[in-house]
Length: 230
Length: 207
Picture 1 (cartoon, rainbow over the protein chains, first blue to last red):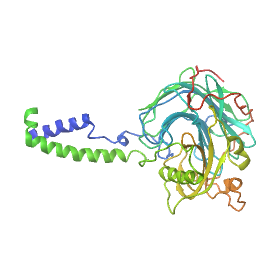
Picture 2: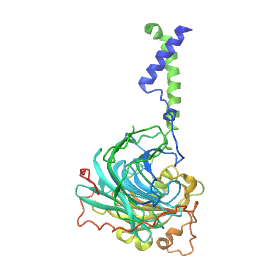
Picture 3: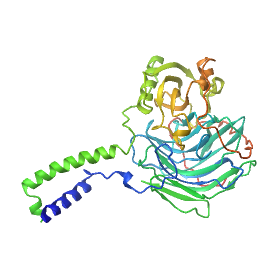
Picture 4: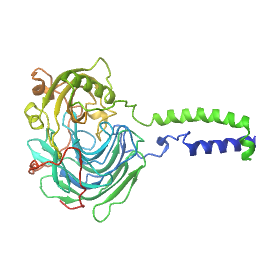
């Protein structure tokens, strides 16, 4: 019996090493704050300002996980936390399109209708740093933007149907299903616009949203943190 | 020990069990990712409007599975990005040269939950929608813009149908914060980089 048990141990180890046996990633301990579309989500967020947030800004490197379907994003944005509206922008590996690395912006208006734009005309460098920002531009419309070394560009003007500052600002990574890899990214010089002002203000996260037990570093002196869920 | 384990009969039995374990492992792994997406994008530069409509239905079925009925393309037309706000759709920008674009609106009964870039609990937004509007980049054969509407009310202008009903919020916005102060929208770039070019990374900087 002991001999058979040792054989199975050896064979199981060989199976694991060969990839024939795959351990589901859901087995990883999860600290879910609330269900958000069944995605891998690891980000830092803040909702400490009673005035809310009229915009967000970050420098973010481009995650490039080994995926062939779905997507991996590095969103920075503002939201009503547990309900629409929201707006975000960031890098995406868009395997729901051409599997290229592109800038994107997505949003939901106050009625809860979803919208997204992926700029398919430019490719991002894997691991390269780019700037992403979102803010209110008037007429109940919010704008998502991104910048490379050549300049800054509009991703989309989203008619969100509100001019009210949103209660949450967040920055990190997400992928299209629970357990899907996000990859690794670094974010630095995080800024937000407090409601009622036009002043870009540095922020550090006060809470972590982590549905998959991914890594998030502490907020550094340059409002910087790292995310990893390879 | 290893030699005994690897005797012919035991290796055969072991391989058979490994195969079963491998199949089980693959199945378990498959449950951790999105449903298989076998859609293969291709250029639509020479496609007819009818072909783009059928392509939009195929793209939709691959990414936002129909919950009932058969999806139908109800509008397919060439469009320039600058013309989108005039028909009630979002203004979008491109960093590269604007490719030929086609607006395609598909009507059906779609489940958005597994395929969109949202951070919110599906209990709070319209994950089940009747209308999806795409602006296809015909060069790449993939949508750049995607907008959704539960009942079509957001697409009254695009579809020229004033009778399409309003979409009602699933959860009324409950925030009571200060008004956001508008800041200037970004001006369009004076020139565009070549289509499909690599964006040069930028050194991190403050706003």
